Length: 632
Image 1 (cartoon, helix red, strand yellow):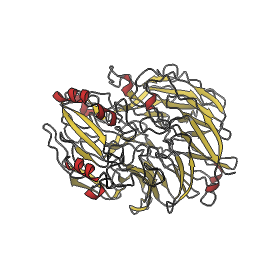
Image 2 (tube, helix red, strand yellow):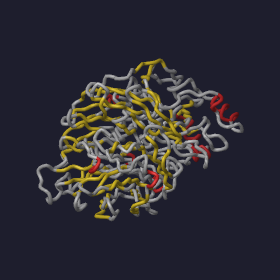
Image 3 (tube, helix red, strand yellow):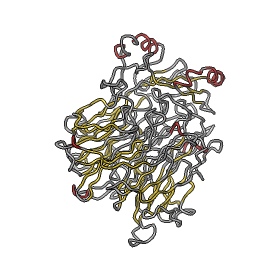
Image 4 (cartoon, rainbow, N blue to C red):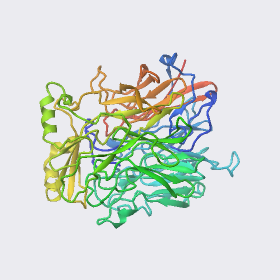
């Protein structure tokens, strides 16, 4: 879910930051495309393209650059803007969306604009998030080439609309909804006092002639937020075909709780008629006394029958979430070693769950273990949590982890004065250490999967968060008087709950994290064995040193034996060897690369493309660039 804080220091992100998902036909190396946000509907982010490989990647050069002009001085939420889009390639056109929901079609070989659509989002409105990760495409099988809206491009907007555009012209498909759009805020039980808290930031899924979407809902500002309902609309008419509520019990709570929404990217298996829904926590994030029990199906991946929305199975990764541990990653679909259809769930905790895709039964062992319990009156934390075979990040802290020599005492005293009994230590009035913090583990950048090496690659974050619950009768005074805390962290009112909250990340007086580096990595794991293959720092907080940094954005893998990713604080696009993790190439981007790259091959030439526009909340350099690379 997303935060309502107006400003963040780049060192102290207080929020969990938030494609078409239709399985593509098998690719050949000579005609590899990228038709969906994660390339295929299962989000593998793997390309059969192999012209660029380990022997020649060092020779990559800039082929073309396009600037969107999306930097908007008049936008009220400009300081939050994040260019997180991954373009898609469909019918020899490159389609993408800007942070303000402009949709752009480009010539993929020259970077020349073909058309642009402006949905006229109200830029004077305050939005919880200012981003759009991409668009989706659907071909109408009942229309012939050349007919209007045979190819439809779908996008969800910051103001809660679902829009259908003609892929040839960029004009709205007027037969979809009302003049080309559906108002998603309608029937979503959204709060009228802040319409900027109900949005769509990820591209919808496409399956069985339906366009399926979740929503991004601002959290921590109140209990009764919008419903986290996932809805499927007829891709031709925009009529509602089915709706699924992940938290049906929420309507019976007093006050009524909200969220449990799917703000990340959905995955689709068209052969099995399944759509996989990753959900976030129910509102509010850090106090669950109003929502007793496990809170199913928040913090889960749920398989629904794509054609009907019927529940098939669900797997909850966190019971009764008190840490903002949404399932932020797109579920990854792959084939298990015995041919079983499988699914991978990456989590903010860094734990990786590998399940049978058809039944939800674990393929690698999962164990329910006892966890620390709450000391907050009225709260009932879950006595156990699920622990997986694979863990990508450390989960324990020791005194030796606390900062450098000059900062160790400050960090140790801060941790010592807080509750900390390991992962899943509940929030407290004295303050609780949360490690890994709510930015991850693995966030919306998700993972990539190489079917040749059966290796999964993901970017990880490794920062210590700190959370304090504030009794309601003290919240207003503390919020109004602690100026420094508002600069370096976030107050969340959690209106309707007996406690507000303050959360931050633990950075020492020297402005470095209170745990030992690396603070962000790119990591490879063999999914058949569950064992780590390699783990390398990604980005840096200290120029010239490989410390790793906060990263937002994902990796992609090619048949050329390469992993490409940016995402870190160092503004570089990197290429790593899939087998060893050795860095083979890097390129300085003109702005932050908080997006996942993609690749395609046209007329015998392979292109590597990334959007580089920075991230307002993360504090990387902002811009409006789309860059394509190729061999000379």
